Image (cartoon, rainbow, N blue to C red):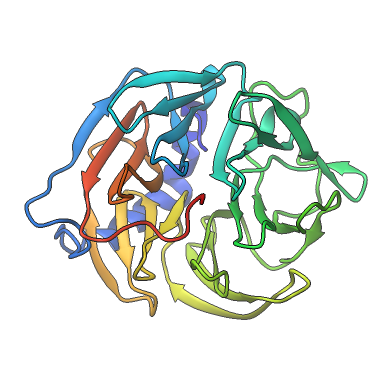
Length: 305
């Protein structure tokens, strides 16, 4: 989600504490398959983000500065899925096979069909542009939670955030209007939910905290509680409920917030993660100019079905 021009700001805000918090030791978490090592799949990008897996196990991710969505197929082939792509950032598949993308060129949330046609779901709140939709998580019922921080983009013609704060929003299934569901976060970024949709995790990257909430039937969030004192750019969850946070590599926490280990990624910034592959048992990592993978013992949580 961070293009190279703002990496220095990210490091100032989060990098040093991310490093201290994440690398007490560099042991692999036991969620990684025994003996597995990190593999660089490709490094032909400007800045990678937004990985998400479809029902077949293909992984789609963004090369945001180059305004394209890439596809890494289960047979190891790389292709361009969509270009231009609204300078898409975070993405997540819905249950119908549509790719939901935070297309921040016009501060919009897109739904992209398998043949590449897109529909704008929302692009504003309370009559004003969004700051720049950053990450999205589709819940089992088709509703969506979107993080909307402000990171200035070179393709914008304004220099101040349109909204009065940086928040999380809820979009009901089939809805056309967003509901603001947080008011007390500094800069919400990574987001993920348990497979049953009963717990939503949100990372406040500037606040250097990751929180858990209980989503309510109307989309509001209750019972806010601290999971760990670590912010995150992207986030995903496995079938055991463990959380994968990014920034300085990938740090893994169990559902209670206990640190399980750290996957070192030797790049300036690790942006995001998802599970993919035919068995959903490979962790894909977008980091700076590259795409990585590592074989896992666990599988991804809820994915497109």
